[in-house]
Image (cartoon, rainbow, N blue to C red):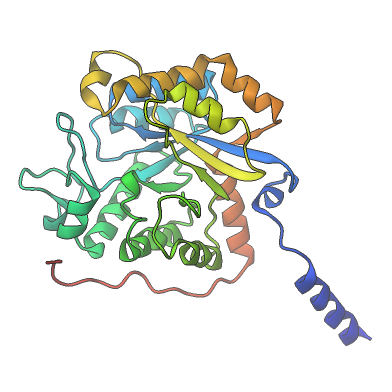
Length: 321
């Protein structure tokens, strides 16, 4: 009788549909759950000031910090003094600006251009670096953030450098496993490698969580930030989504410190003080959360489930031609 009951329980558990991420987070399967994340924090004082204001008075629920950038120390000090603030690490292997540049923490040969800065594009980074060097740099960035008092909640990758190549995705996956952190993943159907679905499945097998949908900032030609976000957020999908934007306070520093400074200032104003976005989210009864809720769920799940051991990324010798 006991054996029969055990068999029945096993059959029922296998036939029951798996819970959605929203349900595992304590919401219903029909809820719209949204992470409002800020990118490129630490790049400038203008980005830090906007991030703090949007966290404290606006709609942002988390931010992604660039550890090698010039104003990292300022935002790290804020995070250490405000432990409830939700910050992840924006793993940074490129430096695209013409006036504002930064150097990798590890200064490996393949990570730096002839001037000692991070490479200016993902393509030149791929051509010069190795996954082994990228892995060491990624680990160093997360460890620096932790050492400075940031309670790191998630990982993402600047310019998608660790997502747009299979071998660099293994670096991303490896750091997430080592540090038990959820990650940003590009949604199916968007700009992505051909094996994106396989990569998402591998993260699932590792117990590494990611949102159901990532909302990319892909405006129509000439479309303002306000118009884009208004259009995009009027009909959020059911499930857990992440959007990311690039806030910065308008002014001279922003004008010289980042690409598209006017758009960054507009996004900061929209997500901090514009009543339209609040109304859009209220009408849809959107539940806003930060990445910390996802990280804490992941860690509970991984403690209670045995995941197969996966070797770290294999060292790569030599350089690409």
